[in-house]
Image 1 (cartoon, one colour):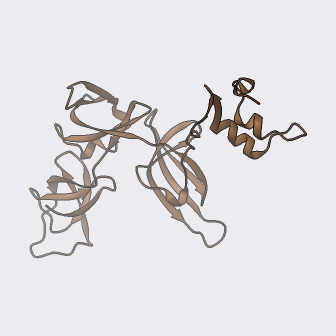
Image 2: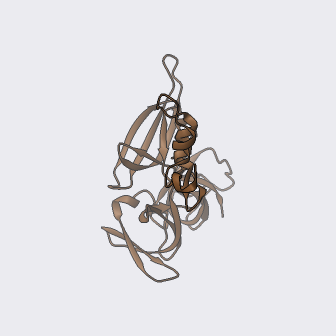
Length: 236
């Protein structure tokens, strides 16, 4: 058979068709990978497969697809009851509406993971309805709904640089750093010499956030904290 006889027929059509007219598995792969083009075989890469994660791989801040929407994992907890199968309790935040829902899944249940892109932008201000950011390179501004950032805003300082997340080219949220340093503006007076850290009290920070801190922390202290878990780390 000459190249002219082959024409645009695929490699699988020539090599993988059985006598009964059905195609073998190799032939199916051939359809996806090779075709005859301009007198030679051309190999095409297979399309990428969607990444799948199970509940065992859940992490705070990870994005998954559920019921046709993209959700961010805010919190999760693995539960192993005395009777029955293990399960995972989660708190998920919709990137579309900003609503937060509680969902429970079977241990090991799998979901399509949604990859996000991140870009450093300057946080300008919160108008009440929208939160405005600026691209530090082009000076272009973009706004996100206030409801979408209610959990992050208490730990964001005006004019600070944050990572804005993009899904499918559209801004969808903010990824907070692993730690930030903020000043304590209100808390009960600390006890001199008390260095016990496992007993805590509430403290209000300069951004309005309220977290639990050790008894020895005082007004005016700068503290290092994890904004994702709202957890005190140490005095800065």
